[in-house]
View (cartoon, rainbow, N blue to C red):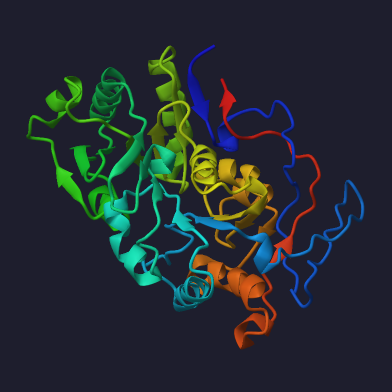
Length: 360
């Protein structure tokens, strides 16, 4: 048995059934009442409705950033900003915490715009926990020899490698002659990318003076299954975990890193029960915290697995979907909250085959 773990159900075989994991394809229905429209499963038959949480049910909000809080232009949607600022004004002690694949430095504007600078952050999918001053509270790093091995593998195959340290991103290799500018794509997510190809950065990784929390491998989407297999074949005895926030990016973190671990950390920090946490996300990397939280909400633009895992769904990131849902919960009498939102739905808590963190 290798140490490889994948959070992508597309490339792993379902093996068992997790607890409290919903199933069924997304259902587009008007959200006209406090109760979600029931989902009639063609397999399991009609099931009961799932009520929305009340404002008092929610003691902490955790949210992904890219594809969730941010639009495709890497900006906050006005409705999402307005909804969160309302919560900050009316419930200032309610923690609102980004849990993201990004670094905290890349979210500085987000923290300011949402007035959440007083809260910590879970970054690099939970590999690094920052306090509210931007200092590292906890960090899980990848094995240096493994980082160098992956970098060399990508160089030999003419692929791009981005290595994430605590406060910047080192470009260790860059695909030549491709149809996509992967450096520009990477800078779109984390602007603090620096070209480290002609420097001694990899030597610093080797001697441990630079610690890598995440490896970011962007490539043409159709190549992703091939490279997941290649990574597994090349490093059969090294424990690591792959995840995808977007279909065309492979991200690698240490074996036990997961957004659900960040959720547990913040629950302990604030003495909040997981059942009183609401989570928002759009990628396969969000599924762990979806299953761990009492309330989970997938975006309309989400990948298939988080859509199937979440208990609720909302509009897309480009529609301010996080704001849509929060307005429903925290100020249902607000004019915008009264509008029908076709993407909002509730899924049934019926068993769904495991597709996350399968040991191959």
